[in-house]
Amino acid sequence: MKIHNESNSRKKKLFKCSSCEGSFTSKQHLENHNKTEHKKEKSVECKICRRVFSRKQDLKTHVFSVHDKKKPFECNICDARFASKGVLNIHISSVHEGIKPFKCRVCDGSFVTKPSLNMHIRSVHEGKKPFSCNICDATFTQKPKVNRHIAMVHEGKKPFQCNICDASFAQKAHLKKHVASSHDETKPFQCNLCDV
Image 1 (tube, rainbow, N blue to C red):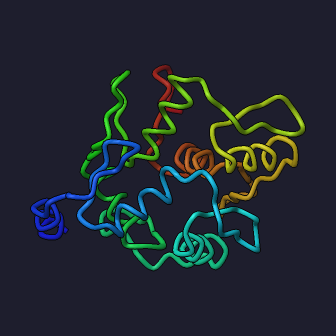
Image 2 (cartoon, helix red, strand yellow):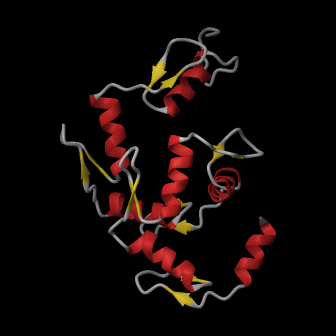
């Protein structure tokens, strides 16, 4: 990957985006960037969950990983698995190497991808939360967060089941905390008055 990154960094980025500061090594990369970053209308819909994508490849990756639950690319540092090599590489550089190249100009925030930086700016600094729950007054920065909110809060879904006991959780992070605090030998918190 290091060799790949070095060879790509030497290429001249002659194709400049007219909407942002992005520059690219090929016209195709610029067109893909414009479709995913700046084109508001999305054209391809998942027939299973109705999520909409701007590129067919993104839809294929979505179906492959979310609905078919196929994640053949495994991180050699941790147990995480991914549907594409690109997402695995992003995981390694951000989680294990701490690389977050997209810096916020307003605060100290740094992000793995340009879209995540843009989302941060819109929601945190501009206060934009354009997606709202049709059951309550909650608003969100992304449509998938509305869907997750409805499933967890209004439908009471808890899809993350502990494989040791009968506990189930609405979020994967809550399941991980449960396993670490209830079932692991090493407990993250220890009482300083007793051995519990």
